[in-house]
Amino acid sequence: PDVPKPTPCARTECWLSPFSHPRGKSMEAIGLALQQQYTALQSRAAYRSLLDPTVDDVRKLSVSLKR
Image 1 (cartoon, rainbow, N blue to C red):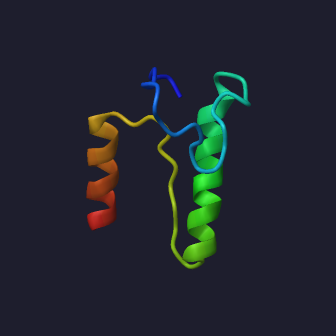
Image 2 (image 1 turned 180 degrees about the vertical axis):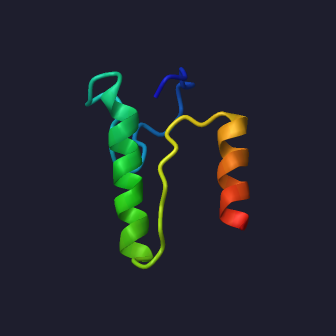
Image 3 (image 1 turned 90 degrees about the vertical axis):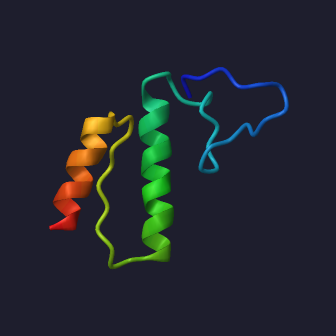
């Protein structure tokens, strides 16, 4: 939602328009919708939301899941 897109591009993310929500809430709404879609496909899996992760956040999460 924060990146300007070129003219021929997709307008929705996770079946939601990022411009239909306030600026700070669009990322959370897209993350929640994506988690609900994954939960419908794989109900027994555990999910953790990292909405705008840094490299260190991804590294910590992957190391903790590896154990």
